[in-house]
Length: 125
Image 1: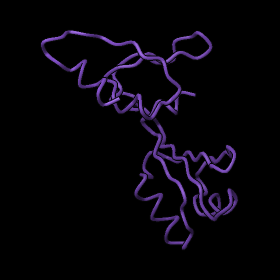
Image 2: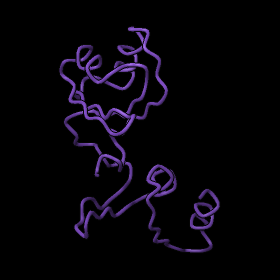
Image 3: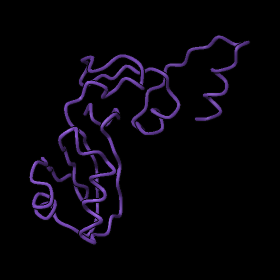
């Protein structure tokens, strides 16, 4: 992907690339702009950096040695859904990823996986 990015960034070669992928994290890291379709309908079109800029909440994915119920007790304003072993957590905008992680770690819970998807295309699903 980085090689592709280098090729299209070459000033001598004005090239655009249309890339279709389900590997969202990789696409976000190499793209300037995206078009996101869901069942043929346009969900988002624009710069990667603008995704989530008008959001009203933060959203995280997390796995660890805690239950959904324990996280709800820890952050009663959270909306939490289970997606396999991962919990999808929506919190008010004022709770940043750093503050969220501090709350979880202060309870001595172990975190196995964490991703802030507040400004990610993953939120568009």
